[in-house]
Image 1 (cartoon, rainbow, N blue to C red):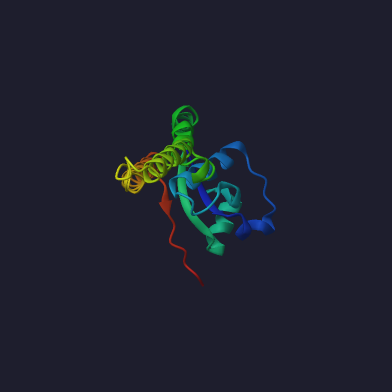
Image 2 (image 1 turned 135 degrees about the horizontal axis):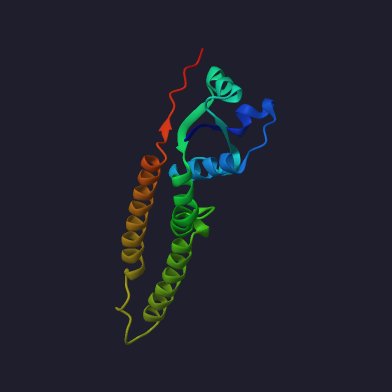
Length: 165
């Protein structure tokens, strides 16, 4: 098991760090767990028990700590990453579910317009897109939050209280 500290890349820019694949993975998981607060590319991971980890702690720039093990890395690669693509993607508008939601909403709006322009069927479809949007949006967001909580538990993610000097 390796514990990583996650920091904003800009806070550790003076160290000019390159990231290992595990460190990049840690940043990706943090980004997924804290839905859109930070993009993975804007974060850096450092091993907690390294010189860089000590530096990050002393500078007060550590935002999160997390654990990576061979087991939970495998879970991310085989399951978590795929679920992430469906729920969140590299940007919410790019996720599979939100893309499908957009297409469905567009079709419902076309139906409402068709009914609204009809003399015989004018009353049909009124408010259908709003009702569907609210229902689907609420449920997708609940699912995203549940996914986030599972990630926080699985990777023992904790927000670090920054003590400023």
